[in-house]
Image (cartoon, rainbow, N blue to C red; front, top):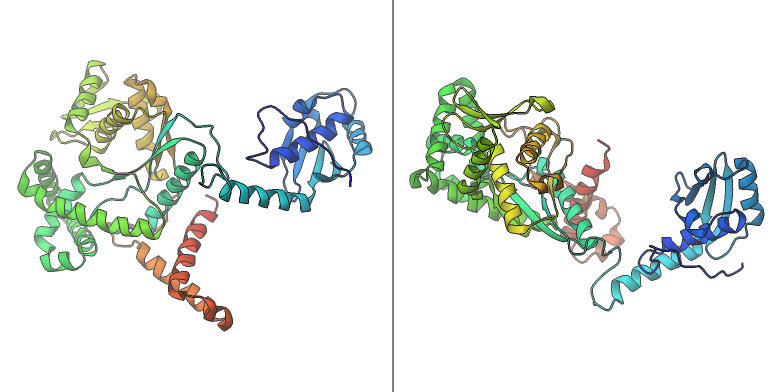
Length: 449
């Protein structure tokens, strides 16, 4: 098998991506048979499908002559080497198979060198510097405090962690942000329920579980009696007004919730740079946002509430201030985004939020655009489908603790079936749990949505 030196193609880097070498080898062979430069062919060497390593669509080059004749010229001059083992003509395409022995050796050599033999002494395999000098904020997971981490939070957590690692590997400065749902009328509802169903003893024993039980019970009450929601709204207004008696329990619930979440994230091998929350969005920024909207003539009055009419863009009307004067989710998001840009001067900000919030995010982005913030165009919503049939209000959620426990049990029982291998495992319980958690992650993200 003949050995062939490879030319250098601009904007390629075989030292960090060995596939650049294989693509260059294919481009070289085709350029030797057709009136094309290596650079022209290289741009047309695409990853193959259905068992084919690389594919070239010949019509893209717009060469004179029939495709069959062009393909025949390439095939007649083709000789296998240490890079490419075969070529096949299929309609308008040429399909190339790589030399498997070389491919395996080159990939493993590069993984080893880029992981263990770097000048920085840090793993660099799969990294590049395309994002050097840029900053991205990625907001993900973002559960509501006083509620247990359930499987519905898992997708945002996994997707956000993956995106964070991906951007980081491309040289971006990544700010991993967990924007907790720690403010709003629902906390007035929990406070109202706690007065009726709360137990200090149960709270100290398992705060998250107890607050969840209270939330489910008070929601049932609210369905039967509208006055419960009225009382919850009053309670939240007291919180917004800084009433210490209304804030005291909320602070305890938030602290206990964050502590519990940190334990869950540690088990999932996920971490955050910042635990932020709706409660931390300064009233100053919310007021500035409303003032700017008002000055620009974008706010109108609707039964005492303040709204921004977005029907022109088929986004309905967005409420930015309730008629009782209390803030709303959208206003806090607007104020929060402005605050973040002033603090971080990000080049991009990504929100990993379920498709259930598509309208909200679209309204949020459009309002910022109308406010003429140039950075509004750098905001991106990465959405995902919901876990069907779950509701915290009805108490029908499946908690992550339960999922991990069951997955670990399944893996433990599976491992025990091979007694010899099981006996060789140093810590079978921990191993089963780690494999179970990995399985949960893969299973949840494997299905197409």
